[in-house]
Image: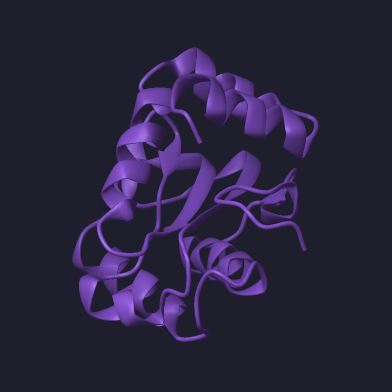
Length: 147
C-alpha cells in the first residue's frame, strides 16, 4: 500500500447508509488497514463519540480517538468514507462524509484545522459528497489545506 497521510486506498465511495457506530468502525478499520493505528484505536474513537459528538457540521463527521488512545497511533493518517445518503450522527445531524483521523503527537490538531478549512465551505462538502473517484476527493481535500 502507498504511504502518505491520505492515500486513495484510504478512501471508500458510495457506502450505503449504516449506523454511526458502524461508520466509525469502518473508518477505524481503514486506519488499521493503512497501518496508521493499532486495532484498539477504534475503541478510542467510539469512546470519543460517546463523550462528545465528532459531527463537525456541513454534513461532515471526523471521528478520532481520545487522548489516552494516542499510544495506539503508529503514524499520522486520514481516511474518508463517502455516504451519499448519509449517516445519522444524532440530534438531527447527518454526515455524508466521515473522515477518520489519527495524528502522532500534536499532528491531529494540524490535520483537523486543514480539514476544517475545506469543510467550512458547503460547496466543498457537496463536491466531496458527489466525487466519483478517490483522486477527486484527494484533490478537493488538498486544494484548501495542503495535505
